[in-house]
Image 1 (cartoon, rainbow, N blue to C red):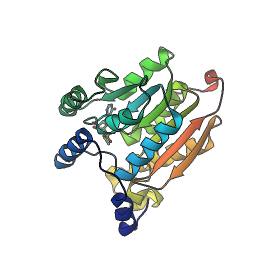
Image 2: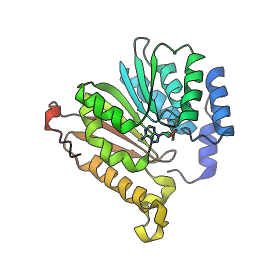
Image 3: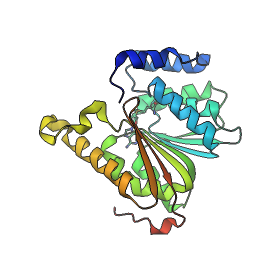
Amino acid sequence: MITNARLVNYIHSLEPDQSEILEAVRKEALAADVPIIRDETAALLKCLIRIINPKRILEIGAAVGYSALIMAEVMPESATILTVESYEPRIREARRNFMHSPYHDRITLVEGDAGELLRRLTEEKQNFDFIFLDAAKAQYPLWLPYLMRLMRPGAVLVSDNILQEGSIIESRYQIARRDRTIHARMREYLYTLKHTEGLETAIVPIGDGISISTRYQEDNNKIEIGL
Ligand SMILES: C[S@@+](CC[C@H](N)C(=O)[O-])C[C@H]1O[C@@H](n2cnc3c(N)ncnc32)[C@H](O)[C@@H]1O
């Protein structure tokens, strides 16, 4: 996490204007206190999509569709996005935002629990070139075996909010009781990302902290699902 506010403001000031639709979705989301990715995270996401040129993108945590639309703007023309959201008011909003965008036929929104979706996609042996993970943080370590199975070799997994506003470095006793599960699970997630054979991971301290992982193992049957 970059903690120098002036530096972050400077980085933001370099961002060119967004498309009208993205700016409208962003403004509405911020006005309604919907948590959406930060500008510097969006810039990195766009850059990665341009480098990887993914055909199939999976997003976990659509909210009102802002980050999906960001990815859609820079993905190849033949690419598709599958995204999932469980909170009804946001589902409605995301559907509306997708419908009003030029990408409505290339973004599929699944309504419901991401864990169930991950189990189904894994059973169907689907795979993706790029996964953006941005939902219930405490679920990250539980979802990781599924995510790994869904990554074709060479695929990239980007996980958001991994540094938890910096609190990730505090001892458990410095953390409010209600946040201790998330704190412990996120530490477990980061440790696993860095120590799992078949994954190469960098932890990048921008925004609220993101990790970028790529899968290099050829045989995904070696990936154990312990749930
Ligand atoms: C941080 S927001 C996503 C923001 C979005 N990626 C963006 O930047 O535009 C996280 C979203 O994940 C959703 N979510 C949390 N747990 C979920 C689950 N188990 N299944 C589906 N959606 C979930 C929340 O309702 C919330 O809208």
